[in-house]
Length: 242
Ligand SMILES: Nc1ncnc2c1ncn2[C@@H]1O[C@H](COP(=O)(O)OP(=O)(O)OP(=O)(O)O)[C@@H](O)[C@H]1O
Ligand SMILES: [Mg+2]
Image (cartoon, rainbow, N blue to C red; front, top):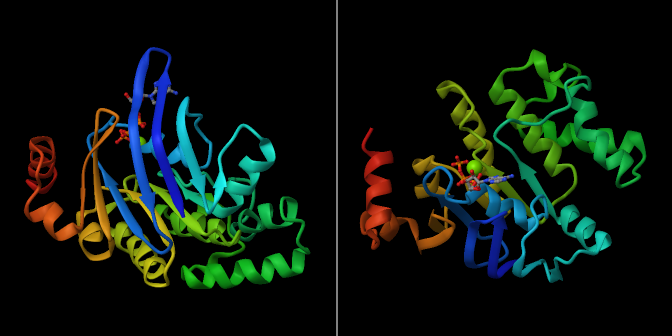
């Protein structure tokens, strides 16, 4: 479903991604962790071309990512993304946020787009808030709207970049629950998160990044119980230690 081969990226002189190789099968759930600044966000943002890479190949669902705008748009239609800070339009209602791309990008009839959006809002248990504005919702509710909005485009893959790290503790679970449900339904997912409980229960593979490289990857059980690299050990002791 996703293939990264020999991916390298620089910001000016700064070598932010170093020879990243990663292959994700359909239905696989990957958790990516690592210290701040290690390149996690940059890596997943390269997959839908929110960031441009300089070397290496990216293939999503059989489509190579090139400079061709049609190619980029085709990949973006396949890849949903959820950010740390929701990125909802504040002047549009929850329902309007969800229907924006289906109506204007996919050219779907408004009635049909709204009906489908309501189904997704139901799924993330927020349909009763459909006519409110984002500012009238809690952080956890807004993040669930952001997930529903992505699902409205029927993506093959979902990318999550620390979707719970801006939330108050009591709201983290409601967002993780939605993500667990998505995982159980077979969605291919790449999640940057430090929610290690989520990683243990949901991930097929956990990837540890440091200084722009994938240092270690493994199934959750060996990853957490028997990390191989010293850097992984140190990182895990820091985040699991408190
Ligand atoms: N637009 C940019 N221009 C220059 N440097 C950047 C830019 N975006 C990110 N960087 C740098 O690239 C490195 C990797 O950033 P990235 O956001 O991918 O890290 P991260 O692993 O997601 O960190 P965090 O856990 O804090 O989100 C950091 O050192 C960051 O300062
Ligand atoms: Mg990041």
